[in-house]
Amino acid sequence: MKKIIIVAPHFPPSNLAAVHRTRLFAKHLPKFGWEPIVVTVHHDYYEEELDWDLVELVPEDLRIERVSALPTEPFRIVGNIGVRGFVPLLRRLLRLTKAEDIDFLYLPIPPHFAALLGPLVQKLRGVPYGIDYIDPWVQSSWHPDERLFNKHWFARKLAPLLEPLAVRDASLITGVAEGYYEDVLERNPHLRTQAVTAAMPYGGETDDHRAVASLGAEPYLFRNDDRTFHLVYAGALLPKAMDPLDRVFHSIAEHRARFDDVCFHFIGTGTSPDDPKGYKVRPVAEQYGLWESVVREHPPRIPYVDALVHQEEADAVFVLGSTEPHYTPSKVYQGVLAEKPILAVLHEASSACKVLRRTGAGRVLDFGGEADVDAIREEFAEAFSEFCQFADAFEAEQIDVSAFNAYSARSVTEELTDALSTALRGHDSQNTDSESRN
Image (tube, rainbow, N blue to C red; front, side, top):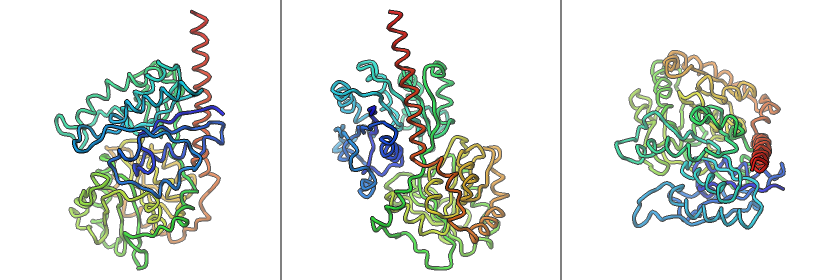
């Protein structure tokens, strides 16, 4: 088997969303002839709340190499785990690539700073590398938490300087969707001929939902034992999702009678992962008089298995997209596997629209971007009424499983291995050409 190192500074028991990308790839890579080695920072150096149930979903035979990092106590100079763990990660990578035949180095980002490990290892050890864009790196727009000279300001200013260094010698550029790396190719046109590109969504994992019962998890934020129609949105709420959220709530307020006995639960949507008072949805709901009557929010992130439990407890899953066309919410795949009807408000270019329509798992109200976002206010109430009729007749058996298989974690990993093989051949060919010229 070929060997691939995946550099994931955060990995279970970290409860950050990005850990699932590496976890699911690592689970399925051996099926396609690749032996994964995950190089991560030890959980003693994480700042987020740890999720030990998530560790149960990691393959027992997965090889994990853990390194130290700069501590954040008693003095927190920098929080970014990619910065704090950079030197220990580099040392471990150099040791592994010297002692073993490593075929490829793969770097999912964020944390973005860790992507700079790729060109260093490639230069010192000759191992080809690829970068996986879970989120874009260079951001032209202002972050809502950004103030002059704060961490968001510095990160945005450094990104255009650091990204070209990180991708310069890359053999592979991937992302959750094409939109996540299209701008990278525009900024670095040499990658169009040098690097293989591939777009792969997160993908759904059936075994995760089977684990819910075996781990004995129970819902605790609400119980579906009344006549209320419960919808759950679980996961982070992006800054550019706030305008669509405002229009949804505006529409509900204008047609309040249609939403009697309806409750939207927003879980893990706060301003930070661990702040119980970091409400982001509540102020908008209060503005329209919907707080507690139609809308409730639990700001802190909850463990992954607990999030799945609450989706299964609900009557339906609610998905809210962003005005950025490339955004593809991974909760769509969780909703399909929870076998619940899904109501989604998404940018028309989001690949999640295609997933829901092909599988028949839900209904989509799409919009054309920032210029078209006001249409949500006009159309949401009617779309919700139609969705309720769909949900009343919904049966899990009506989901087109064959259509969803293309979006499974296994299929997504197969796409990755195809891209890896092509990138490896291209790298070997370039080396051969270089040697012949010399």
